Image (cartoon, rainbow, N blue to C red; front, side, top):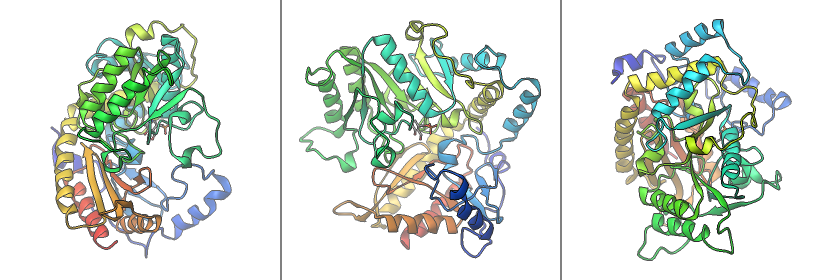
Length: 457
Ligand SMILES: Cc1ncc(COP(=O)(O)O)c(C=O)c1O
């Protein structure tokens, strides 16, 4: 496993270090003020009071020279940290040889597809086909169409709290008014079922677990003539819900869903865009459940600094799709492919998946222990380096922390040099999803500051 010393050399030293009188500083403030004149504020970070100027490893500088520890990794993208020297080297080398090849085969894409087959989860390993695109939304878009094409069925089952992207079909699966309001109607044929979010489950459970109840309900939905018997092409599920609040259900839920899919002829699609690429302490987060997916969607951390996304499909399914029916001009260009392979090598050679499991457990244990003394924390949960801290106004009633409190916390973190972005159905979950290359020292510093900010919130 890579040493702490080696990891520390990947980032700036001395973080966090805020040198301006409050953040954003004057230069960042000016940029933020003029942004709405030129850039659409519909983007997710539209209201976030930070400007990135320089990135190195898990550290980021803004244009005023403030130095931050980023425990968000560009929303889970920078799996090996920003501008990793090996990534920069391969980018330089590959860009002198070949960059764009359109959809025509290129040597790097060919090598990447083989490599992905070798790291795919059991069931797909060395028996799968990769289809490439550029973003998570695009990957979901294609997975939905592929599932419909091979099953000859129409409907797609997704879950409350799900986030699968904002394109026409993926937005239909995504829940959350902030992403949907006014943009519909979306692709038809989508059914939403409850996700096992035990902390906020709206129905009585009796003597069953949340996972059992939700899993049984999926079985019911796939089998009732009132909804979709014999017409569901795929169940699309995040093995750990990301934007929905960092919710990691127990394996039983996925096992029940998989059994229902098998029984009723639907495909099981694991959306690994946020939770994949080693983040949860396994290369693929569905591996925690011991369930073999029919398809996987990937994005974010696979390509790291460069856009890379796609669908990994069971070979027998992929072979039913018509050749040349789904071209994409920018799919897996040679530089992105080379960088993705280097990312995977860095993760595997550094033992970063195992390290994510270990370090994540240490942080989770610490936060859970500390939460007893902090009434603002409702629940701490997570898997590997994907940890959510759900904040509440009232621990008894579980009323979510309000917008003002969240703003105070996020600003408190930023002004102490920690970048952390919230998520969740009520926007009240702080998420720890640092690059897998974060040092123990920086991780502990970030947690120390987080706990201080929460004490004073
Ligand atoms: C689970 C999941 N699927 C899909 C997407 C969409 O990815 P992108 O923003 O690259 O389109 C996201 C983005 O956050 C995600 O978390």
